[in-house]
Length: 414
Image 1: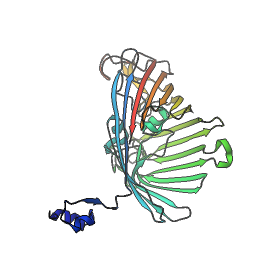
Image 2: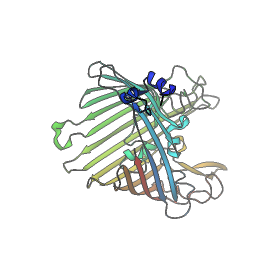
Image 3: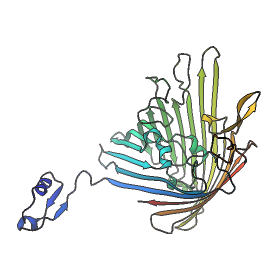
Image 4: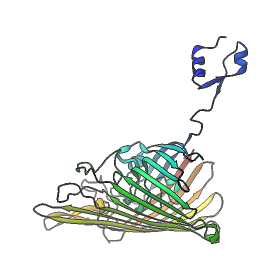
């Protein structure tokens, strides 16, 4: 049999090689893959699913933590994530890339207007000192104890601190490992809050060409000489820049959003037992100058404590206690409305306490299975959860001070 022309063409450009046996005799072509620039590329990802039950009736006002809306009393496909990446090599001037695509309701919240692109960046190393690393493009936010990926967290549901934090930034990020115990990160991004690709401000807000967000992070890691505490981490970050829309005296959008994060994980002398803690503080200022000049400062802060115990190679138990407080940053902790002096005023719900317990067991290879119980309590003493009907329609007003979630989470990693 003659070798087809298309086969010879593929061989000519290096996509396939022809075996010696094929060249020596008239035989069926045997295509042998060759190493190309794609050899170092990896493909990974996950499929994240859940089943949720909220005891009682009425789900018009679920607890407002991230990725919870619309999942009550049923089965859910949370997200499908695929990451294609080539890591930096060992050479001095190394380079690589990451392209991560995500789909599903959680992905839409993570990606904002960039859906389905979650991350897409080029990473480069410069041989300065221990190596200066750069990322340019869209990358996961530096802030937070928890990840947007549920499988990387001790619990299935997210904390309020994670809820308030941005998920993605678009810009330039530099990182430098001073030593094994100290890593520094600093970057410049278009905005602090997660918006669509290449957005310079919130929709409807004027663009200030010279305004950019500044992001910083410091990570301290306990050295081996600390014995049982080795590997413990303390992380602190501060971001400043463009936040949500507001007007200043020039009629342009405000530039007064600050985000502070401090968190850490402590290893203990008890094998498999770790503790963690986090604090998030976000401050945002709106300044509107007109005939009725107004100044509005909004903030939110959230604290959380974590404990995890790896009982066996397959079984782990994790718990989280958290408290969030803030007068309605971006409306997240305000619900419904009430009649006051002839006008509709927001019902105050700006303090929430939550307790979460999770049992994780790996019965199948590459599969994470978890059972979780969570309790959210409106610490203001107002009804903040529940309610029948559709949110925003008559009959949907909250009628509970407590919200209970019982959930099962199954994730396949590949």
